[in-house]
Image 1 (cartoon, rainbow, N blue to C red):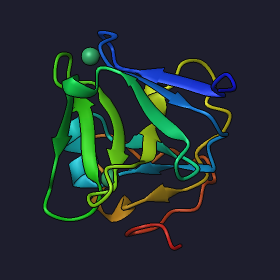
Image 2: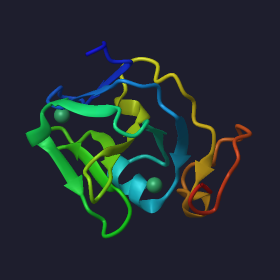
Image 3: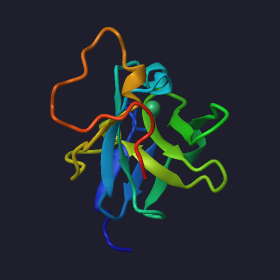
Image 4: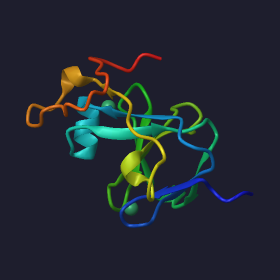
Length: 138
Ligand SMILES: [Zn+2]
Ligand SMILES: [Zn+2]
């Protein structure tokens, strides 16, 4: 095993992840589900190279919210930290919340999705990133 490129974890330290390849991309999501589960106006997430992310501690502490479609939204059952989202069939980690990454994730959000659902209480930052009313294309 080579040393992991990135590590991530929750606020209380129960759940730890290792990601052994650079993140492929990142974006902000302004959808209502992300607002609810993160308590923020938008959630920044990074896409992992398939198969590169592993839960190395606290697998039994990971809660999974199945909203009925899309990815399972995974969090720490002890502290509530948003951690990652997983494929509903395989359980594989697909995206990691950038706030869960230790240090610099190595990528920067490149777009904003679901801006049609953006929170009324915070203007979308005028940062020049492309905005999509719904899901990012591709
Ligand atoms: Zn925790
Ligand atoms: Zn979202």
